[in-house]
Image (cartoon, helix red, strand yellow):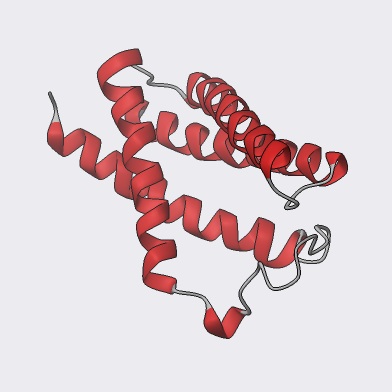
Length: 135
């Protein structure tokens, strides 16, 4: 197993996911998702930033492990495709589970979240695939 390759690629993916997530959910779609459960979302000043950073780093490491160990992804196109598929399937699973058991989502917000997350994972996958295939 190539630990160094996984760690470096995971770090790159994690940092990119942090800033892309800030752009998508913090700026572009900040007001697009209604607060279906009052008080569910923390205010910006109450966010636990270290946990968000670790969340992004673990996502990067997960994708890096899959890309390096299992699939041999080495182009931005294959990374984009794999990221989109992983993001779509994972987000469908989580959001449908939340929709079935909570008041967190309406059908509209669930579909919007699935779409945004699919793009998010695809972009992260493209960056990581590019990194893995550079010469």
